[in-house]
Image (cartoon, rainbow, N blue to C red):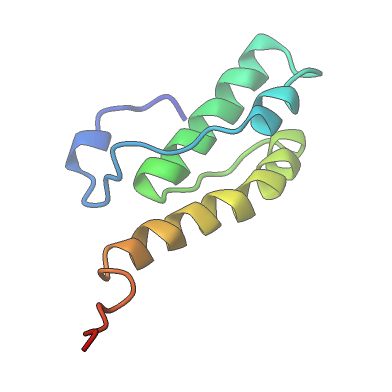
Length: 90
């Protein structure tokens, strides 16, 4: 999980993402190692759309976060389409 050597070669790189307070609050019951695993899994998915095998407790938390990350990725992709067409006013 901590192998960072392949990140620079990843094609998908969104450079940033929104991290919500709910993500932070959900980590309250985790120990330091679990927090690190959870944060890395969020970052890898949001920035590089990569997933990995996670311990069951972290996997269940990630499943709650993933729909929001997916929605943000959709918004980003749709924004690159140019948005609403300009209407010509007479």
